[in-house]
Image (tube, rainbow, N blue to C red; front, side):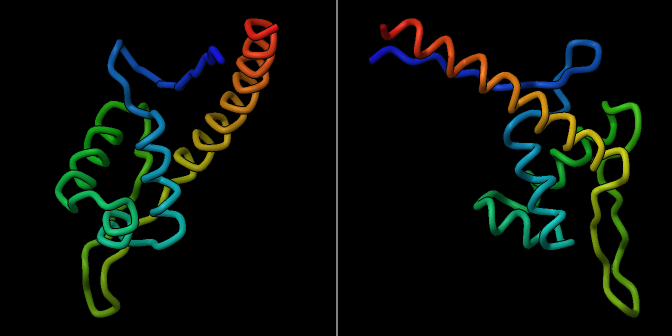
Length: 110
């Protein structure tokens, strides 16, 4: 069986700041509120997670992730309102593209 797959990347000035791995990271941050937990759940290094967040925040028109350093109540990380909106849009685009790709896969395998 022949199968078409499609991955979505959102770019600004030709540089990707949101794609499958970065959306997974944002979702992990939403769940845990912690960079170290997100890194552990994704089985990638904390440094790599930090680098991805820095890249997303630097390239995107607004920060996607808000970091709070430790203090008396400890630090934390949250997806910004802009990041939440972008995640919803990404999921909507992904659902629409999946419908098209599913139809293409039906047609090429007739």
